[in-house]
Length: 196
Figure 1 (cartoon, rainbow, N blue to C red):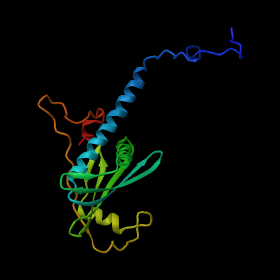
Figure 2: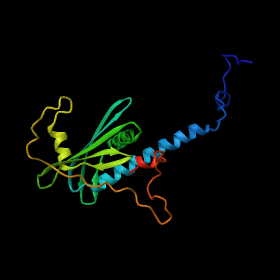
Figure 3: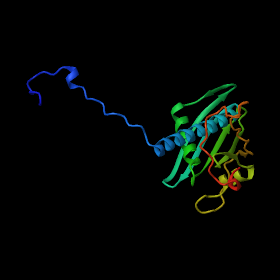
Figure 4: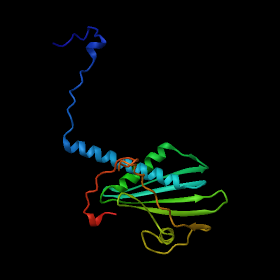
């Protein structure tokens, strides 16, 4: 029976009853767990990278090439001693882009351009491979800056910019139990000869 529109309804009468929540199926649960693990791994990689940065102004550019297209995010941050001045929303977007590059069949790269307190400008980079950030050599990052990606034509490097060998980005340490102290990574389902 429908209430008369002229009747005033109490708050309790206007509440919607919630639909019963069904448990997600196994495939959905596995997909959710894998997505969370992937974001956790990207967060670990991002935080480990930030911890490598020395004092100065840094511009971080992340590119992910996925089946759905290319994503590019960047952020600027400042390191002063143990303090990092950072925009959290930019950090989140950069981390999500790193995660997108970690998805199977995707590729990605991270470039950091640094302005040191002594005025030296430098650039270094990492490629996303096998679910982690792998350092690029000085010659590879120089090539990225001096060869047009679309035409392959040589370009002049930016004046005064030094190219540096990137540091190894450490993975989270394992504690004595054999478990990683970082976040959980998705299972590595690749054949043994295709792993790191």
